[in-house]
Image (cartoon, helix red, strand yellow):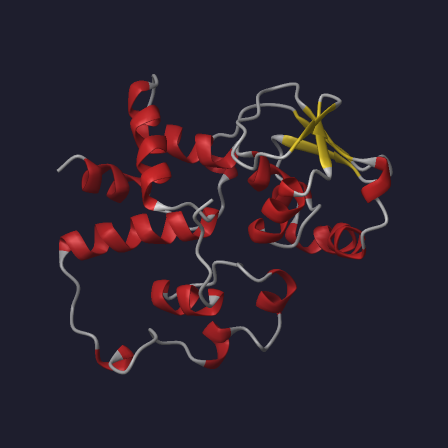
Length: 208
């Protein structure tokens, strides 16, 4: 499976905002944005004005990096969102939010989407009682996500669940911390995505 293996903090600096790619580190003074709040590279502090196309491209790259998706898969999500009824941009965000790795992150079982993806790949979760290992599975209303019994002593998971109070759990999911279980109550809507995203720019970019 293709994936990005470079430095995560470089991506945050390139997008000029905290993407929370490294979990708890992003909340400390070690965060790269707090220490070097300018784009990476030799000419990072002297970049010229960005064109309209550049603004659209940066927005698409930012969303891709937030959810940890490569270009081919991201374009497939956009095409699916475009075929769905409703607003294309909002459909796109809903599809991204309903990925299994994102839901696990939102529920607080992992401190970052990268960590949640690894947990899924290693078979630590079940959906409606069935073991899964595909991070991109699309969840639907009523699905129950549960951490397997043998995985409940993983230190990273317990630490993340203790810290979930600071990050908060979205209204469209429900977390039962004692049972290590989560439930999809409703489909996510635009208001549930609190990350500053201008999805219309992505629609304009792919509509050229």
